Length: 174
Image 1: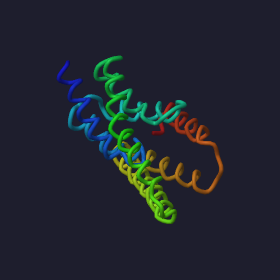
Image 2: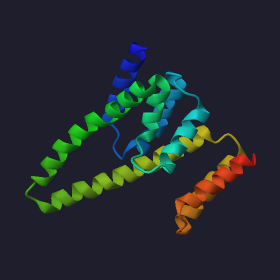
Image 3: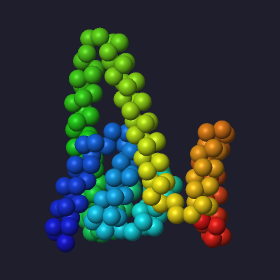
Image 4: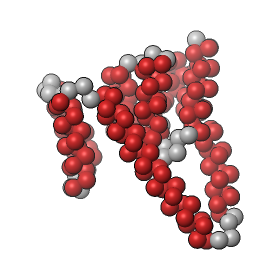
């Protein structure tokens, strides 16, 4: 058990260093690690944990916390949460200090806009990667495409989409 928790800590700490754009940008890699490589959870559990994390208030790192909880109970949840947070937090602290100390305000703005664009791109790529891995039916693909269209073209609150997905799941359509 200790070796599993140590592996959890080391692997999630490494993920943290490349979590540019947040945990959602890492979802395909996190899926591959937790489902395919380490077999900590299965595909359905990963999808369930992601849905819980998205529906719950607070940071999106709850997916990682839930995986840690599945691996090692409360201690696993704490280890996973700390592991995913500490490296990137330290790195961002020093990076932000460096950016704010730049004398050229134009360079500051360019760096901040580039970081924002990179984060959005990584999150979109991650969303696509997860959709490809967890959608196993035409109905699931259609739900994903419909959700994207509704999100893009309307101002519907995401909770409506979650309820629709939940109802379709309970009725056995996906």
